Image 1 (cartoon, rainbow, N blue to C red):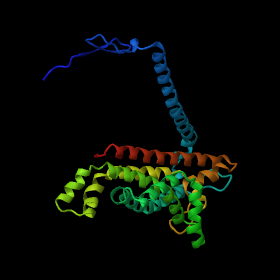
Image 2 (cartoon, one colour; image 1 turned 135 degrees about the horizontal axis):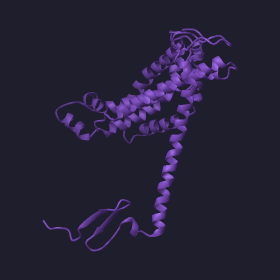
Image 3 (cartoon, rainbow, N blue to C red; image 1 turned 30 degrees about the horizontal axis):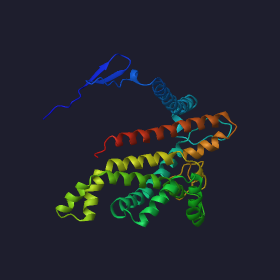
Image 4 (tube, helix red, strand yellow; image 1 turned 45 degrees about the horizontal axis):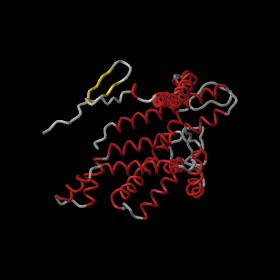
Length: 309
């Protein structure tokens, strides 16, 4: 085999990288026109500034919530007692933690089957069809719908027929929020599975259904879990849809057909009460909710690193 006519050589002087050829062509930073070099440096600085504008508010929120909520959160009664009456200083919000887990659990049980099945249709059966286009368009629209409208939807189809607020209706509202995230993330995960795996499975006699269930879904499982975890984190902090569905409850409640307290709604109500003790509980609940969302985000990051394809 012959050798290329031009051989490249690299050099590093501590400030820049130089690349030159035997023919004398130099494309190092110093060889660029001054205005291009200045433009490049300005854009680099702007990129760093814009990145900082995203990180600084996040750090500010984390530090502020931690400083104002940690003193109340370390009290042992915070997880085992009910909120105090207005003006008193003892109590907790354990019932709101249970209510939050109940509504999120119901929302996950509703949204995951529907979302995964819809994604399977989009990725495996409905490519290029009008129905698939309609489903994708609906997902895009639903992603931008305000959360309060999802609460009104659940209020109309669940609360009004049942005649009362409930944890189940709150789960339905949150499921509507989670559904488009699960559908789109699962669809992308299924499309990332190499088509050779499908062809190999069918080549040894597997049906289309067996290929999807036993080959495609297991291969995309980590990505699907990542999408589900992100959707749960998205729904965990929503208060507006829960005001129309699960509403609130100042007592312990474990029945899914009864109103329940949730952390977002408790934060909303306690933050507008003109008592320091209630406001301290609101900050503690905000820190707890923020910790839950961060935990789900970390889990999503972990599962995203386990991708096979």
